Length: 155
Image 1 (cartoon, rainbow, N blue to C red):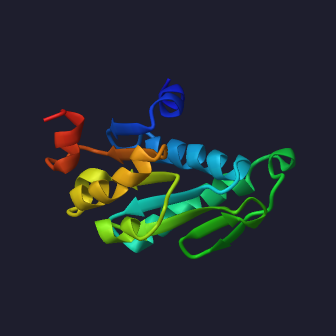
Image 2 (cartoon, helix red, strand yellow):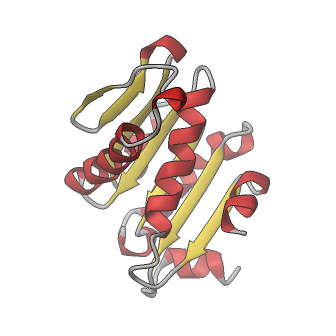
Image 3 (tube, helix red, strand yellow):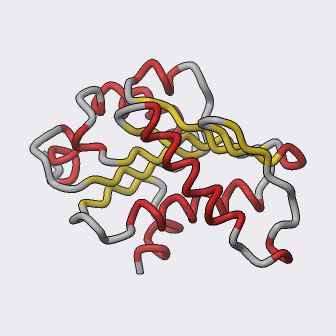
């Protein structure tokens, strides 16, 4: 059900409790997008750069454990980056903040633990051109009074 919703809704906010594997699922969905589509530029944003790299590493972990027939295009991985050069597609990990996204054109943005990012509102505002331009934004977080809660509750 969540996967179907992700495919249908380009702007998706997912409140979660811990240990639900939602972040893993969203990493896998964006990995699928960059593995099988040309010119995708996806950002995984977390509070700290190290956490964003951990999300990129999850996508790499999933990629490496797939059957060979799914690995039509080879992945190249460095710190905070997983790319598919043949497709000109990539996942880039970035720390929180609007300025991190503003300088790039994205086809997708995954903001993990959005409720714990003090600059989530600025980052969301910077992501608006991605959303308005036909890209995808997925915000995921466990509970914490914040901008994320305001968006989820449509206040």
